[in-house]
Length: 425
Image (cartoon, rainbow, N blue to C red; front, side, top):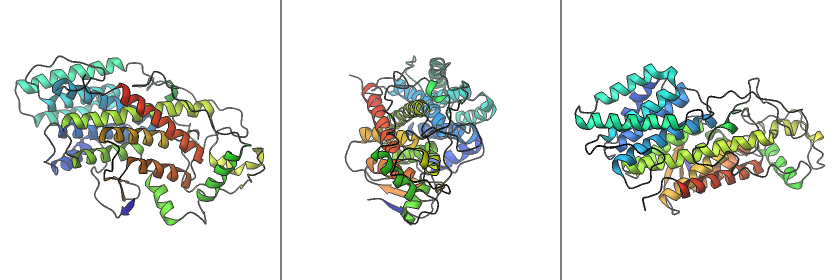
């Protein structure tokens, strides 16, 4: 059962700069001294990365997911190299016997972040040096810096020319029934995503769905009616709770998930290797789900409900009727409708978490900086169902887009879990 509570202090107060984010991070983690040594370093640099990518770097959820995946795969490889027990993702450094995990994690994450965001080098250097000052000098610290540098540089070389910095112009297809058109004056987001090198998948279209239903079909008419009725800004049938759920899930996907994953790791008392592995599995699956999702979005270029409903007299379906004044509850994201990116991303993360923790009941929570609420769950599948409802109730998506997005995310997650981050034989 899901319930909500009132406003509360979140794990991280989003800061204006990386240094401010580090101050918030250390303040938050200092309140949890029970966290195992090393796990705090993983959490600290996870939040520093989150801030550099989302707050300062201003990456939208699709690209942010891939950047987060790169950083967390790097952190995982550092921790595995030092603590052992699991297969590395990609980089296997030489590790001296006396090596500081904290220094290695900080150095590897810092190296990758500076490499991916060179315009933030000065502020990231300040955070890194301040962090190193908190680690006792000595051979262990020096060894940790050396190991972290090797892993960070190795990851940057592995991801060189991965498409995240490419420029891919948006090309509008001739307008017509079913064809996506931008929902904002700006260029649609994510045009480069279909060409981004996945972290685990063989290629971006590996799990591409079959596409939206035909406009003249009964399935289309059914899902059209649902979003038309429940997703309109002035809906007479959407409940206050449904409106609250829709707003809750308009927080930026990446910090919303990441800060709550860290809270879950703290609550469960995860060790450094457990925390690094959980984050790596979740973010790599989430990042590749976004790559696959945007591959499908720009392959099918399917129209959003706002245009589908306003122009329903052009769709050839006798069971749909136009409403020229129809507007969604909230502003529609500016990229193609099918499949739903939030469904792809959330389902991928939820599926990996169920694999990590097991299929049984597990009490956990997620918060939203948009609404100031915390929502409580006992199964990860509950989150998927809630997100799939939320995007329809917000007026963003048709139900079939949610279901196919979830299927894509689930397939990606299962592929990642089968092939990466597994225990040594």
